[in-house]
Length: 421
Image 1 (cartoon, helix red, strand yellow):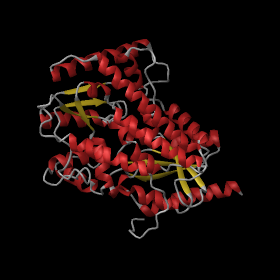
Image 2: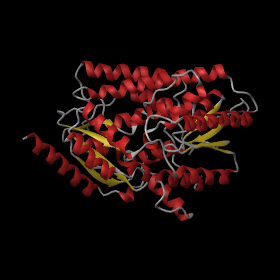
Image 3: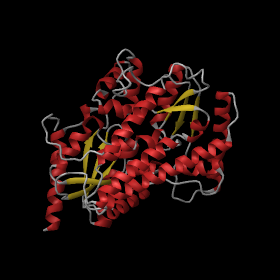
């Protein structure tokens, strides 16, 4: 699967290069030696953290999870995980966390963030912002980071939601935290929050999310204009820069190119589309394009996934920024019940006309993986769409067996063929 001579059967998006360039400059600018003199600071934040407030306060948000994905794609995450394990971190904890600590504990050889930024890992943080809406591991991870750097930590606590109806007491609790969050940032930056600017940032975020959702929905076309690997690359700005006008402009460019593909009935892969599968969970970063390219050679395309849909939430409904942000950042896929996951996977599989579902059961992300066996059974029962579980990891190649994975996928494809006959 990793052969450099493997025939590439996926089409590259020209706008994807714009996204890569934007991300490269984003990380390069975060290492500006005059950043603090310009009145800015750096925050390390979880992917589910409320980023708009940081942008409005001239705080540069950086994401250890996103860095982990970059290190994984560079095929260096396993080495960094082993560095952290040598310092006492268990192999059973999140590979993103181990990759992050590995880069900190081996500063002489962290993974370069891009071809432009060859100076190493993430810029040193001034503060930490942690939201537990997508993960429980981040609590101890960020507490350890706070001890490592001796810097302040803000934790945004989001108890799991039973359904889409948020009780009044829950909303009060979340909104009060948002108010405390603003006070925390004001204290760190020694200035008051500019509410007009915060409103502008949220509007940019709203536009970015709306464009991202439109891009994802184009996957309903047959053939699908996007494959999983495309979306996993394109999602970077909506995670780390969604409050900026640059992200809005990037996604306008991406949308136009993907819409053109739809108009010309041009698929993401260059061979006839035979199987449409839904992908559930984080991708296998260290084997990203080779994995999907191998399947594409068999006519497999992934028009939809649950992972990139996590950043398609909308907000700004009541006009109260703190309350709306509280609703948005608690109303997350991984912060809801198993029944919600079952319903969503079934809905997406039908909406995007999938004839199979691939569940990536990961050693690292237990919150995402727990419940997948039940989800598989229940979704198939409701939709008649078959699914299979593959075992692996997003960043640790030691937890991945290519032979076992491909055997299970081939069995799923055979089952789909049988259902058709």
